[in-house]
Amino acid sequence: MERVIRLATTADAAQCAAIYGPYVNATAVSFEMQAPSAEDIAGRIENTLQRFPWLVCADGDEVLGYAYAGPHRQRAAFQWSVEVSVYVKDGSHRQGLGRALYTSLFACLRVLGFFKAYAVIALPNDASVGLHEAVGFRHVGTFDDVGYKLGRWHPVGYWELTLQPPSTPRDPTPLPDADGTEAWREAVATGEGMLR
Image 1 (cartoon, rainbow, N blue to C red):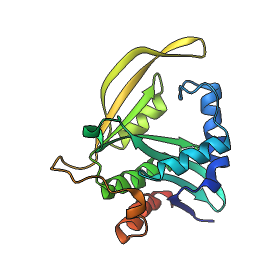
Image 2 (tube, rainbow, N blue to C red):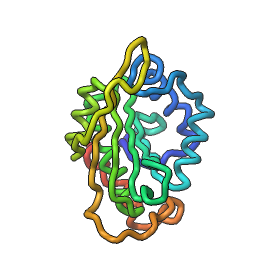
Image 3 (cartoon, rainbow, N blue to C red):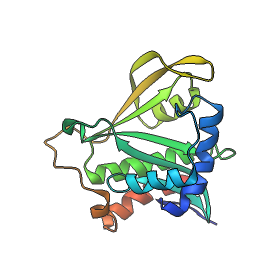
């Protein structure tokens, strides 16, 4: 089968939950304390896709990883900024999936009219820092000992990526209004060339 990047659907929820669960249960990568169920993830996918991209990298019916965006902050002046995350299935690391998913995600975010992306990384996490810096993020600050999990305090670093130069913005386009357009199809496919 050929690996593709596409919008997630609720049918992907069980596989996304299986990918994410070990990050929650065994690491401080996520500050969630209990892994969400497939039903929880289905709700998150539905909610996210009202405004933001949630992309999966799939090989046939198998989801190998996913990336999504969400609001950076709730107040209106922040609406042109997003927080992003990427997760890759155990056994599929170091194959370029994270970079490919992010490449498509960032292209989609530009189509929708976003200007800044932020990544929040529990430290230490050399692999995540390396990926984010490789795709253009720069470190903009660290909160020391801000999260307590697995018996110890963890600092959290913040990384920033400029998606497009600052200008007078229009309201971000809701994802359903962009889906199906040529620009959207091209944006989703942007990272696929990195999977060959």
